[in-house]
Length: 59
Image (tube, rainbow, N blue to C red; front, side, top):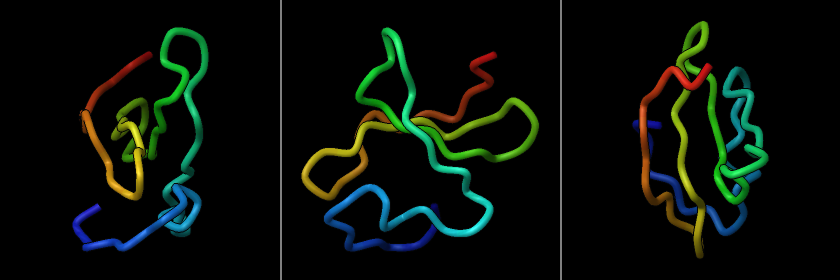
């Protein structure tokens, strides 16, 4: 995610290989992008901006 995006919809940042997907359960409203193995970048997407960005192994 080192690029500067001007996205209005979270789907606009789903580049090939990102595997962008919504999280579920108590993490509903958050999104994840695959980095490697179990590692993901997770974030909330609000009004065209990413907030609460984390790099985590959430499995």
